[in-house]
Length: 180
Length: 180
Length: 180
Image (cartoon, rainbow over all chains, first blue to last red; front, side):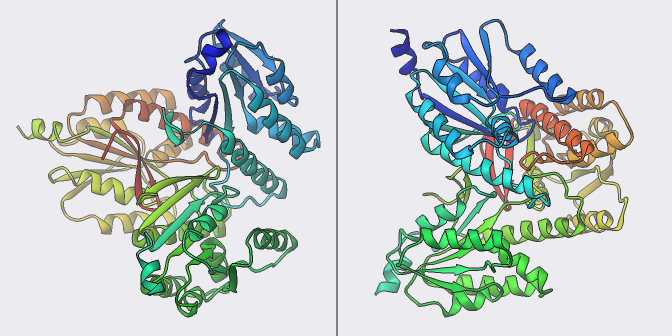
């Protein structure tokens, strides 16, 4: 009955969008913590340099012992599908996942389809964090332009399936789809 | 009576803002298609390179035979003024138009005034798409800074006259002015 | 009794966020002018180059004789604390202030704490303008990335204490926190 309880626990699928240092991760954590613990944190970050390692450690320190961390820099669909059946999941974040897929030259369209399938078959609340990166001047770098395009399309695809889409601005939620 | 019908068909002038790959064009098309066909698509894009040509072709494929395409890389006011009197119009987009004006060193203020006059005398629904480009770090490139300033001011001027201003985020509309 | 009157005059602390050339300064001025004059304009800009000098002069021209200008490129807390006790204050803007602190290698965390204290002890309406800079692609420049992080965190801290947070888009307010 735990699954059933969680399943009726409000929206199943939430997309949390935000800019850099907007407080989107913190907001997403609080959204997941509205479900009963334990919670699963799916980390897509790989500590490739010191800057990123420090950021990962800082985020982990903020979370407590009720969180189980799963690392999934590439196989996000697999991590969601095999996670404990009764736990709410936080995916942080789709932007790093997309970046990892690009670096490894994976078939991004196929991977997004796998994610969509995993998302829609999951029975517990699922909160996905992603960056909004398209509100600046066109980047001079072609690779940056390509990333911006892919990120925008990915966000649209996830948003179309989400029950709730939240844009976090200065730590505060604006509801683009659904309600608090 | 067709003009009158369309004229009472809800807001006359809609500005659709969004970031890159935000789904703003698709949203704007659906807004125009709430009026009866045929619809006029005013394209400001010029296929200067392969990347842009591919994008233009993709957008055109998505639209059907109920759309008449008018190319207006520079004379946007003229295209709006001379379009068939009973058709709703989509202008996609003001950002490329502004970029074209800059490249040709036209008098931007004068052209915007001409656009404002054409917009406000038009009797059928008019939907204009534009990019929001000012939410990033100050660009190092002076020309990019100038473009960002001009785009911001243009958006403000059109928004002030619009009945409805929509910010599209991940394919979803947020109403900044007016209501659905 | 004037202080008391102003203090009950609606929200005390308003954060006005916006992109470049979004109309945020103009909106913030109108918000301050809902209180009785005279008003205090706290300018954080220093005219380091011609581009900036022209912008400062243009903003000043727009304001009238009911505004008293105080320059505070670094000591913002001091300017707020010592301003005339009965006047509403506009701070324009936190982004230039942050940039000035970085250039002078000040202790940013300590300065933000001083600002928070000054903000929360102030008894008249206080409107602070700041840029939202995190919605673009990750900047290649490390200094720009650092600035983006600091600006994002600063905005979150001020927003958490504000009664009202407004995101200005194309000259129009979106209420992120509080109501008109």
